[in-house]
Image (cartoon, rainbow, N blue to C red):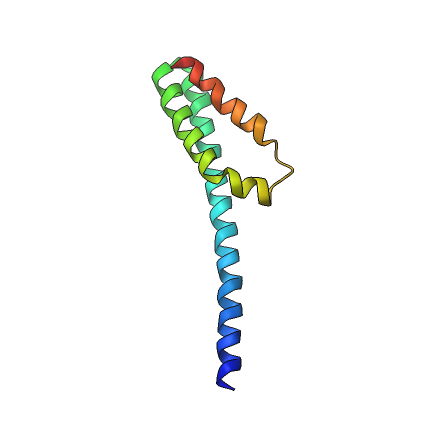
Length: 92
């Protein structure tokens, strides 16, 4: 009986970990979208330094989550997303 409880706890823990990772990826994608909005805003007001800084930040965020994106969101245009971010480096 005790071993059944242990297995149940293990399965539940694995399930919750998967949910936490998915939530985390969603949060990271949302954060990346916010940074990309900051790039657009900086570009619209002519803030070259802001565009450059936020592009670096967005690129770092993308590189951090890219493996998970490729696995879990294969329909997303990853190359297009990275190209959009790298365009900001023209301001640097």
